[in-house]
Length: 330
Image 1 (cartoon, helix red, strand yellow):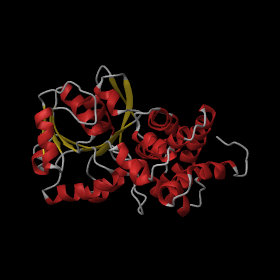
Image 2 (cartoon, one colour):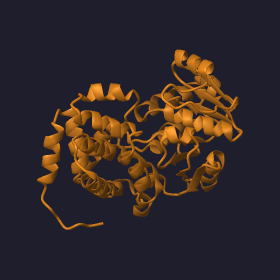
Image 3 (spheres, helix red, strand yellow):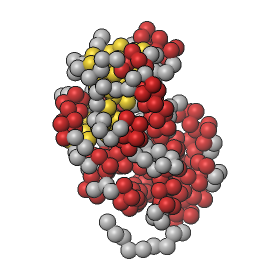
């Protein structure tokens, strides 16, 4: 297959190298001409460990070159960047093939999941799918065993995505719950920031286990607003993604939280991570969803207050601990 790949961050590079290794012709686009030239020259990503890169992977700063003649379009841009990139593609004639989303987030103000944004721009009849699950870019380029899920409202596209990405070390399980797959992958970034803060403050594994468990409960409560299936959030794109993002120092959201607890400002912490921290963006979206639907989201609220209102991380933890205790409902 010929694949047009939108976005050349660490995650996009990891997946594009996988696709090229699977025998597909991949043209990867970045909006920065200087970065495209660097990737052409070095054939390595500056944010990732050295890895084997097949000649089938090529790089460009021309969006039209990336999408022309593609059998599939795969995106790994930011949540906030998805709408303008798709709008630009429409100006160039649009896509004549399915779109596969790999970013994770919820749009601010609208509360739309990524496939809903894409449907709004490309039309509801356009074939759109997604790939999500517990997958760190560093480990994917190292070819460490990884399992994720593919999803779409179209069963054939769900299977096509699995076939495109499946490899001896990268297993893709089909899942028909599009909203559940995307929602779990979006919300876990907020919980990872909270866990990074907890570890940075020197709290133990007991604290982190509580944050992850109550975080999953918070995700499930809020997921009802998007019609997600609860069982999806117990699987790879829910609990699985939550685990890897909250427990690994390779997670940019976890590291961001850790830097906040060390005393860095949100801006300084983001710059030190050196990559997009989606949890910063999604904390706003999730808080808006909670307020709109009168659903308490205390962990999300605490992360939001630390990032946007200057709340001291220690005071945020104390505030969470002062919440009234209710019977545990799972």
